[in-house]
Amino acid sequence: MRRNFRLLVDTCVWIDLVKRHKQLPLLDVLENLINAGVVELILPQIVFDEFESLKPRVLREATQGVSSILQRARAFVERLADENAKAAALAQLDEVDYRIPRLRESAIESLARIEALFVRCGITETSDEVLLAAADRAIRRVAPFHRSKNNMADAVILETYLQALGAAGGVGFRFAFVTLNKNDFIDPTGDNRQPHPDLASVFTRIKSLYFITLAAALQRIEPGAVAEAEFEQNWHEETRGLSELVEALDELVEKLWYGRHQTLAEAIEDGRTRVVEQGEEIGPAGVPATYSQQRLGRCAEGGAYDRRAARPGYTRSLEQFWVGPAERQGVRIALGLG
Image 1 (cartoon, rainbow, N blue to C red):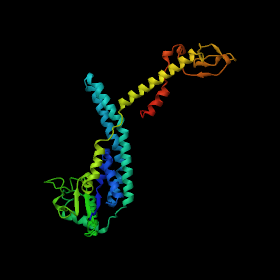
Image 2 (cartoon, one colour):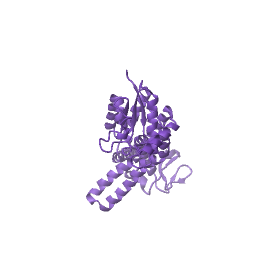
Image 3 (cartoon, rainbow, N blue to C red):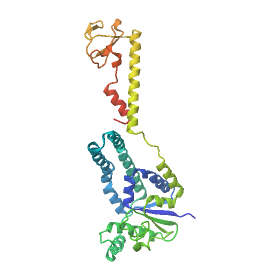
Image 4 (cartoon, one colour):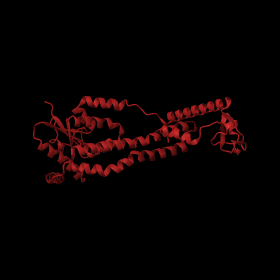
């Protein structure tokens, strides 16, 4: 009979999921396993509190850290790079800079999904027994207190896990503890995938498992699902780069220019539009053409004229027919470059 897992995920693992956007497929797997009833989360109060306090900093670091590095890199390239290589280097930096907003969007999405999981699983309050057990670890100076450091928070997380493990008895569930904290929980003299010797009695091969990555834990629980997620992660479709989008923008603007040019030329050729000189009287009221009046439609019947920004002589030189800056900006916004 398949036994379901109760999974405690340390704060550092949740934060890592937010920071590293390529781990989004792991959230997909975790959500699917929870929906299927295969996994239940153990969420200690202290993990929830730490996550909430770190959210603003994580969102800032999702973009600001990269932005400051890019600024320094650009300054170094401008000052020190060979002239022949400078343009290519700056173009690559522009590509990275263009993708920075996507990092923040990914972090926001991950935060929202993790918070939704927290709401679903509920918070495990810190009991007096857990606090006493954590304090006892400190007195005995055993992991996670083996490094002469106040690790009360880590001890409370561990003891919350042990409390859930003991309360379950021996039937129906397996347990897993996932942490990236390699300083306070791992074996300092051996394989860093193994827990500290002080915790040897806590973790076993079957009932209570220890992992240093969420991917490894999910792989053990549902190997096929993780393999599919890794495929999506490694073979995701790349978005178009900045240089490619700029090239597409230039091509579109040129097509707009050509279409307008041809339309105006045809209208002049068949008499629907005629070129007017500045100061020339148009319409029945004898209104003179102004600097901004490019074309006159149905002038013989005194019809209305179109107003367009133009330079002197602009209407007599069709090769100067152009796409204005406002329209160009509109295209840039449509392409996501605005």
